[in-house]
Image (cartoon, rainbow, N blue to C red; front, side, top):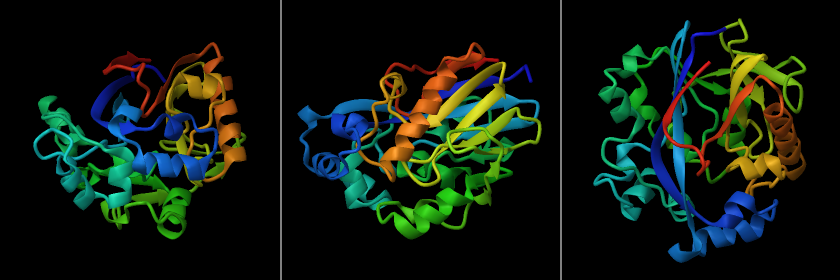
Length: 278
C-alpha cells in the first residue's frame, strides 16, 4: 500500500547508562548502575513517537512523555517520581521540552486526539505510555494482550496507573512472520502489521508499516540504535536473553531486505524528527 507518511516525533528525552542500552543481558549489574550512576556516566537519548498517515486514517504509535513529568520543560525528578515511580525516575531521568509532548505536537499540526483513528502501543514502559491519558479521545487505544498480561502480573517496575483500563487488546496469531512466527494484521490488508518480538518484555512489539516490498519497521525497545541489530548488542535489561537475541537477529535480517526503507528504534540517537513517505 502506497501513499503513507510517517512523522517521526521526538517527544522528550531520557538520560540512561550505557549498560542499560548495551549491557549484553547483564541485568543485575545494569539495574544497579541505572539507579546509582551519576549524570556524567549517562547518555542522553531521544524518546520517539510516530504519527502515521494512511488510507485507514491517522495512527499514533506510542505516546512519549506527557507534560506531567516535566511541568517546566526541564528534568524535574519530583514530578517524574509522582508520575511514574522512584525506581523508574532514577533509571530513566526523563523530561520533555515545552511544546514537544505528542499532544502538543499534534495540536500544532491541527490534530485533536479525537481525530486519531488509533493509538497503538508497542510497549507499556512509562516513556511509551506516559502521554496516553491525554489522548483518550482517540477512536481506539490498542495494545498486545501478551504485553498487558505480562506487565500487570510479572513486572513490578511497570507503572500500571498510566494505562490501567485504557487500551483494548489483540492477540498475536501464527503467521510465520517475526522471530517466533506470530503477528497481528491491524487492518486486515498487511499495511500495518504488529510483529511479536519478545525479549525486552514478554509482549514486546515491532510495527511493520507498508508492504514487504516497501516498508518501514518500528522496533520500539528491541534495541537502542543501529548498533543493537547490526552487532546483536543486547540491551542490559530484559525478560529473556535468548529471545532478545532472536528478535535482534530477525530485525537485522529485515534491515538487509531490499524493501526496507528504515528501521526506527524508540531511542536511536542517530534518528532525527522528520517525515518518511512510503
